[in-house]
Amino acid sequence: MDDLDLLLERLRTDPDDPEGRAVLADWLLEHDQPEAVTWLELEDAHHRGVLDLEGRRRFVELDKRVDPDLRTRIARTRVENCTIELRAKFAYPCPERWAEMKPTADPRQRMCAVCDKAVHFVDTVEEARQHAVRDECVAISPAPERHPHDLRPPVPLPGTFMPPPRPPVPGKPFMPPTLDGIPPNPEPRGDVPSEEPPEPPKRSWWQRLFGS
Image 1: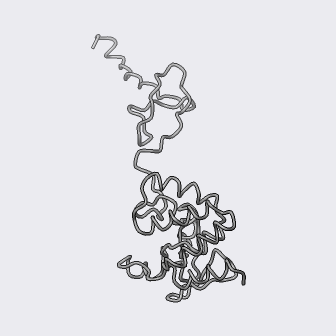
Image 2: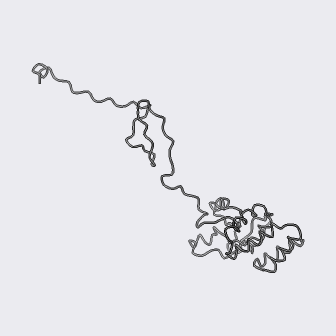
Image 3: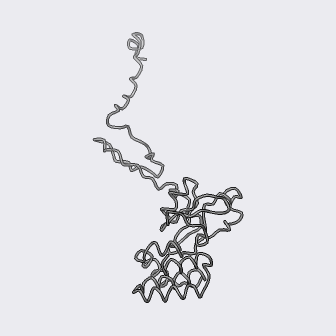
């Protein structure tokens, strides 16, 4: 185990250790990784809830460039879509944190000591949704912007689906479809012949004779 592994293991034991994080920052500077140091500082600001909009933009940018193995091993993010939360109808959050979980052979997967299930680390909310639909626990990188209930699949708003217009019928005015797809005063389609008006009743011989 090299020096970096020792530092990361120390932070896994105590992710909030300020001295351990400072030592890691010094090691990263000594090894020409200034962007990783900035990411570490922004992650700390995010964790303390003091990250401003410019810091958020920079955090998202660096999250795509810093070594993913480093980010995955020290990110302090909570577990979501946990079975415990589901059974309790989200009455309380999962008590576990990704940074404190037991590592596995896969650096982006750890084991939860509470529910004994695998937790998957992902970089985006879209990736997390793919695991969530399979009822798998996830830990999302702290960099992406989050919204309430954003793990649920997006639901289209009523009236947002517009069916393609039908081809125009020769000699008929075009009627654009409404939001529910039914045109007002619908006209018959071009391939369906319109009904002819009924013929007037024929007069009998005596009506024709007497002019009735």
